[in-house]
Length: 157
Image (tube, rainbow, N blue to C red):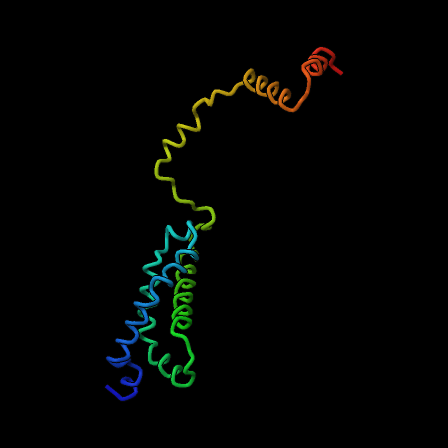
């Protein structure tokens, strides 16, 4: 192993610091991923998987962030991790959409889809006669007098 390889590897203390940072920001980053992944993409991409990929990337790139913090002490670990997670999400989106159908056309089936279909096919009890009765009730409620309704009914234009 050369010294160049050693400088690219994070130290034990660096890995411990990275672990603390990942543990601290994990809920916020997962929440961001869940907001960004719509239902169509969610069928193909899991937020946990994207986060795990970003963790591996963070481990590999942690020495770069430590150097950045030395140069800029106010550099935020959350902003750095957010960028890594966002980049992994974009990569996953590209993989998921490269050769497949349009995600906007893919909607997961509801849990009880056959029950919902059956309920939609059942008669709701509304027919022409009940619709006419509802129209008369509406006319009375709006203040249209019964004689006006009769006039319209018996004297067509």
